[in-house]
Length: 196
Image (cartoon, rainbow, N blue to C red; front, side, top):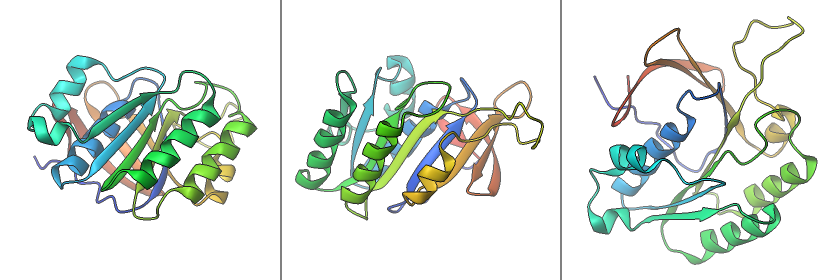
């Protein structure tokens, strides 16, 4: 099996996931790949990734390489966290990826002010840096679509030049479907990341 290569290069991505499907793991997978090619990663979330999962996905990196992973907490005002991220993307050399994990509430409409700050961040962030936003998706209770998961705030995110990615389980077990803006791939989640 081949390790999944996302081929990230300056995209703006909003990843909507089915709960506990591996969104944080996909972010860590992307972080490991970014660090492996000599770039820095900025990671922001309310809670830091599980330490055991972090070491599984980034444990193969050297101490020098792992020092290129910079984590911050969203504690306090969201706009201040965004200001700090903008400053870091402009001040730190060789930033290749910014991950905002669980950046909004887990259900319901995404707060309009949060969406506004995300738009501001996408505009201020250098174009060669990939932004990956991971959040819980939603289901369509009306029955208008049979899609297993939908992205919340999809139109607002598209208006801010974000691609919409979605990920969900394929039954029981480690198989996942990753929909990258309409292009679907079947992946298997393992301790070390995702494989085709």
